[in-house]
Length: 304
Image (tube, rainbow, N blue to C red; front, side, top):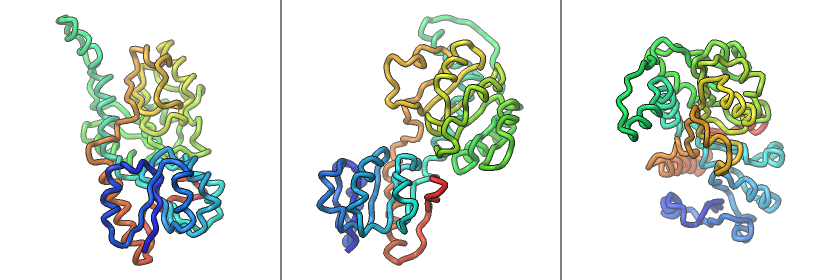
């Protein structure tokens, strides 16, 4: 019998598939108190996004755990200071959301190139106002973080005739890519090294006609510096799916800026995203049963 603790709402729909596994004893809950009786015997922990604090609280009692799986791609909420020196394998769901996030990035480029906000505003006002639009073909997109999401953006961009400039870990000149790009897509994981990566100095290096697109994590960007640059129209705009504080507070200045496209951290939330995440976990669970190497292993020292 494999004892699994899911740090997630007991009503989380994909857990129904896990409950059907004949050799799995599942306990689910959103807080440490509801899981404390089960954590000591658990072999596996399944973690829904943003529950890293619950894992931290339970960790001293998780004596038998051999594997922790994050149902999200991001793992920045995990207590790596506790996990780093343990033998526990950590995996995540990276790669599952790449296509949806890449589509959002392309949509954001089109939003600005075709000035879709102006079209919607004029349609609502019944105004006929022809204007000049831009082509994406021939423009340059700088992709910061060329993993699964970044490559998915690159494939779609190349199909549209967009030139690609990439920044991988310890490769490429980020500042040069920023200077050369019409669109800058942030798709890097949040780690100690990438926190605040796009700071005031790097925003200042962007072209006045450039657009920043963030499908990474809010903390990768100095949000106050970005707001200032947008307000002063030192850059063309930003399309954001992630923020330093979520939900974005109603009084946040980003809401009132005409040159910002706001998405409520839902660019990757397709109708089947939860089911796909659980399918990946079940695939790894079968490997766990057979004592085979798991897929999507997270480097606990690099934190991604």
